[in-house]
Length: 113
Image (cartoon, rainbow, N blue to C red; front, side):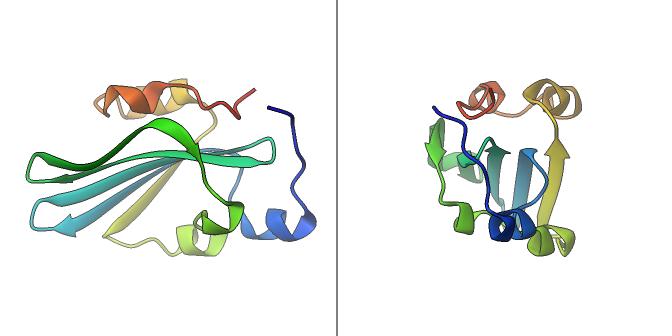
């Protein structure tokens, strides 16, 4: 991967660089966990959705997300009881605070260089 630079418009919209853990509690046993890596001009993500212990969607490999699909600074600042966002500078920082995530969430993103 080659390092890219965000445009001023993208920087104004995107949250702080690093890893963003998003936890959605949909109620009735449904949860969705997304991990985004916003670094070096790219947004990568992995996710896992679970309904009462049954994995609905599991994306174990880092996948490119278009920058305009990333939750914005504004959306993150207005998170509520259903959506929670946590920011980390590194995977190691996240692992210290969330040691029980699915193992694939601890793989360093390819845009973290």
